[in-house]
Length: 91
Image 1 (cartoon, rainbow, N blue to C red):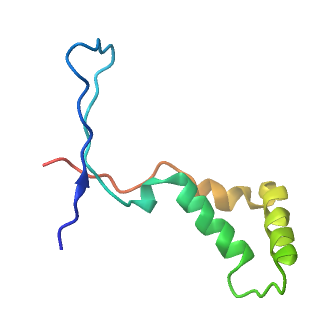
Image 2 (cartoon, rainbow, N blue to C red; image 1 turned 135 degrees about the vertical axis):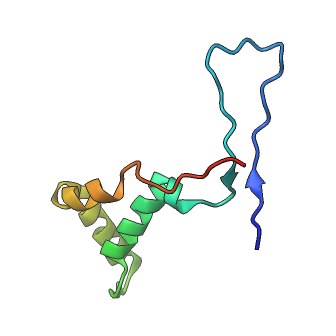
């Protein structure tokens, strides 16, 4: 199955461009390229996986506990939030 690619429009010629812009075609949904998607996956794994929170208040407290103690997860986050990702070549 072929996926559609997101193509950016080039700037109009009247606009001065001081930086070389390379148009790279990316998949419409690419969570591996998005750092916030990787962080959200980490947070869900620490808070919600195999755990039951009877109330929203308990769930919120669990999220706050993880967010307040991010230093404890430094090594895990360092390997997760890197710029290592699958690179796409343009045809």
